Image 1 (cartoon, helix red, strand yellow):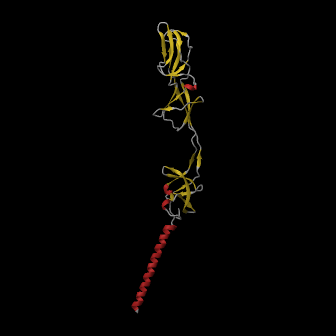
Image 2 (cartoon, helix red, strand yellow):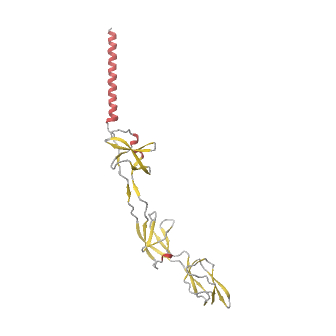
Image 3 (cartoon, rainbow, N blue to C red):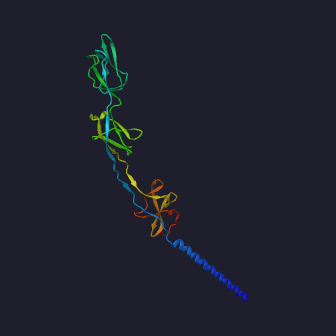
Length: 276
């Protein structure tokens, strides 16, 4: 009987001790996981805003390089026939422009000595002219160029250039990006060798500025994105709409209120975690 009582007392003691030990362990674990706030890094959310476009502009000097013009002379004295000379006419080198009848040499062709544009025609078909008389001029097809040399490549995606309020045609840019040239023959610029050139950036499509967060502040479920935020001292996940991605960071378009605190590194944390 005494042995039975001793065994019962021993079992009761062991059961009580086991219960007390596990009760204390569970309490400590719960306190560590739930009651102790987690220290985190946070980011303040700002509503998307449209960035106002302010065009870049600057003024620099350029040099006008005139196209070369050569005379179309009469080789001999005589009468012009079948003349094909007209101001503004485009001709090619070697093309026959007219014929001249001479009593000694007979009928001789007058040909273009370079390709270009006919200018300053001085006589009419059927007229008698003297030898070496300048019938017209041929301007170089390269036309007049406005050359601009910059210290650094132009920092504009698209731009317009002006001289005295006159818009220039599209520029040809050298391989370095620092040398630009404009064809200006048809713009009737004055004979100044150097002119002031104004560059103005063309309007760009409006850009939006978004709050950008690292990917570890987000979770994805199906096709939906959720962002970890601070909600009454605890971690919560709010559904958000993304505008896109920029260098590995997500751009939040909507879903959060202004000044919401975004919890970084929240993708590995549980909702409801206390936040310090």
